[in-house]
Image: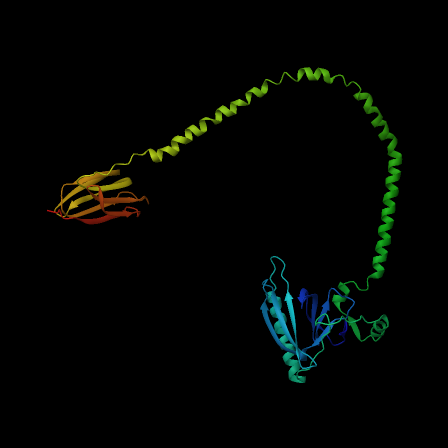
Length: 354
């Protein structure tokens, strides 16, 4: 085990809390001489000292919860290796990767320097850092003897945990008890002097409330406002026209009649929600086509190659569709959504069987 005091030439390099060391909630302190692990759950047990010469490897990573992890391999006296895993728990919206990296860099630096001077020197770890029976806390006599040497000064972390704050707690408890007694006395005296005036006011209330028969006249006037709720049906009649106006809006898209496909002859079909222009027919006989919306134009041929070039006259992204039909059968189809886009299609009419 270690000592909870720093020597005269020892300084604190790094300290951290809210970490988990091998499943133990702990605090870690890195000084110029050692690494100290302090168990939160057993504050009466002295810190675990780990000399830098016993740290063989230092690795970093993340656990399954994405918390930063610092792993140390510690040489044991029996020739084995003990693993110390320091998990830097991350509350919400907190990132501790940089803190873990700073610890890893400093531990690597201190362990390499110590091993170059002294080589690897094993260190003995005791529970709870390794499996085994928990050590018995040291007695008060040993604590007194350690403090009388005046060679050590207490750690800041020990002061934060309030190990020597017994006397202030007692004084705070006495002060709190005295304040409660004063408040109780003040409440009793206040009720004694103010109670007669309050009782007088309460006693006068029943005399003012005695004329209770008056509510009988109020009950006769209450029925008169009943006709007013008749006005409530008015909003219901106003609400009814709303669906009637909405229904034509939904019907308008389906109400637009679609032109039927001619079942005989050769036709070019142009469909566009806007104006268009172009030509259609054969290479030797083209017809001008212009208009808007949807239309069919007959091409007076029975065989050959059909060609059509139709262009949009606006910059919209609406769909322009151009199709060739023969005797109600679709031969070719072309579309475009480009602003002022053009559809160029051609189709060969099937030969007439003799």
